[in-house]
Length: 241
Image (cartoon, rainbow, N blue to C red; front, side):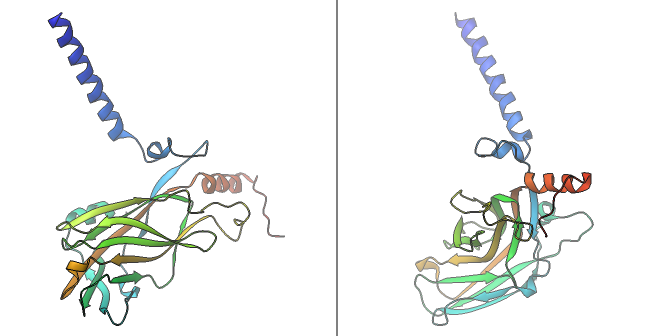
């Protein structure tokens, strides 16, 4: 009986180990198959902003709370560079923000691109690398859905040292694919309006520095790829008349 128990325990261990290996080898689409309402999905990982031209971003915060300066900064992290490097393109810069607080309190500041960043397809998750200086501030993305409504998507607190990759799932309450609104001239998807930081009351003093790099979206591009295949085969019908 004792020998049988040992054999069963060994079998359970190797079954668990095999399951771990399968989980690590799943592709991006497999990650969302259990949560998708669609029969077919084709999720791809797309770098939507590498901040190599971060000097065009703008900073904002209430005038009575402090001052913010946003500029492109050199990124010295090899881990971030390896994760965000694209073929044939150098990766040298990130987005830096310098905030001078006038007073403690529940403040906020934001970093905005020169124009909203459109993400094609149906976005499942957003990811961004952050150097938060181990403060308890809360980082979020402000996104606009296909109806023009704004939503706040939280990445999490910045109470960690060094660089860290944060992620946030996009909920189904955010409309990305509305048949009554999408057309040949208005594609499905969301837009990144800005990156928002809501400050912790006890950490709003003196100077604060924040760095962002490699904003990535995992998006379902099944419909877009099917349309492209139809165009290539001549089966696509254009509604431009």
